[in-house]
Image (cartoon, rainbow, N blue to C red; front, side, top):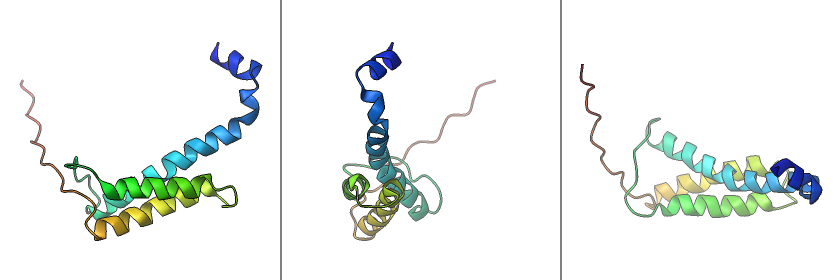
Length: 109
């Protein structure tokens, strides 16, 4: 039913624009996650306390780059911008401390 409506309304004719918007949204998010992973010694640092301003900046600036029609390989560029902006934000202290999470309990036999 969803596919039929998509075709009937003509939305299917502009899927490249839709997927470009999705890529522009997720490119910088993935870039920020990669940067956080690398900056944390190639492990997950855990959940963060408060607002991660470096993450918001990485997403916002990367998204703007990703939706620019004049940027070649915009999704890839938005990913790279996400990595760079998050790394800079982390270096200047915009990433809050990780919250300690208790280790998992061993399974009972």
